Image (cartoon, rainbow, N blue to C red; front, top):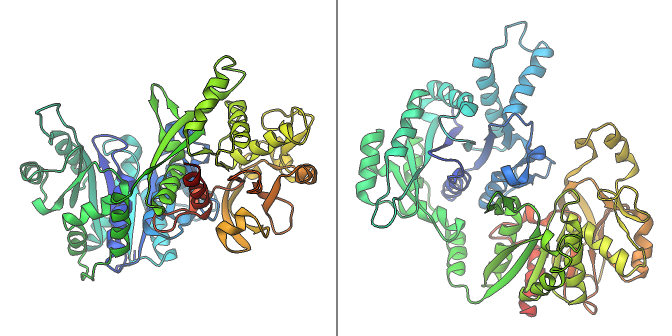
Length: 551
């Protein structure tokens, strides 16, 4: 390992979902603001080779990078906070690491040695971290370890940290993000679970340098002192990380405890001048926002038992926020289950449920897979089109908008996507011929269009008005496309294909003219993946502009 590369490992204690991703992104942001080149890596403890096959209601959103890597949603947080695009080198899973080691063994790259879990798996992890640092030209590498300390799944990652720290003690910092539960009215923040988390780390041969104390409230001096004394860290190294109204406040909160200075000191780095000016201005604009915009998101990946899991659409949610904040407004986002609007499920209540859509300033139908809730989404799209409610469709949302328009306006009765009905008379959405061979061979990954692809925009459209340039690049994650056989039919009936591949074969954006509808736009790609707080995505901005007018 190169001595000049510094590593900050972030692990979680007490419970999952404690906020390691936001903490990692925020630490990366404040160190970046001190003039250092930072990159961020996520290590997932799953045996899945990537996040593409993980259930969104269990794992959350699958985020896609420019190079097509399907990864954990925290990669989206890193990009949004750090403000630049990451690559597949910044993401790994247990499955991908084992796969790599086994492939090397099969290729005789271990020169006949007996390959063992230790040390070869941790060494593969360290090799990947080093390569990612070099590829990103990073001085400091943030590494988030998925899961919680004490779990069997991430013990090998902790062993990799131990091995690296043993070799380069001045180049490695370990931060524990731990939760302090609050005991009811008149109670207190309890430190004992954090003490146990630290002792569990100690049993793996590791001692945290910094403890980020996640809690409902800011940490008082008494609690800081207690954690410091029992966990063998200095009091200044116990950082208060209370709940905040907006995740983008976290870097500012960390700097209140002088975290960047502490990190640089522990990594033996010379402090540089702070520059969080733009970020602070952004936070101030959020706090000074006046008026609200009410957006409905119609999806099907919300339910997990009796709870709502908004993580399934986290990039969509953040992209809405970025756009709304840019107009100095506050976002009010409601989750609408597509099955509530499905005429086959709620025939008696359907019309009444659809009327509720008028309560919203705009409606988004995001991506997804499968047939569940599809007719509900189509009913929502039709209602938005007919009642002139600003509508933005994303990926599957565009495909279903094409299905709805084909049925309602082009006379293609019962038109459908072959994903839902393989025997439909009018397959307006279908798999391209070259992809069908992959599907027959069950090579499902090979049939996906993943990562960034270029698109040309048509003059005089909402799309080119939003982007202000004739050629764009956007990220995809889908296997079905608008069937080229039906494009001219739909165009004759008034649907505009305003974005398409440079060879004019793949349709990327559809829209209706402003004379017919205030904003009816849908994209085959996922614009939400390229939105960030200081640079909202142009399609989301135009959608929110129309929603404000609709208000």
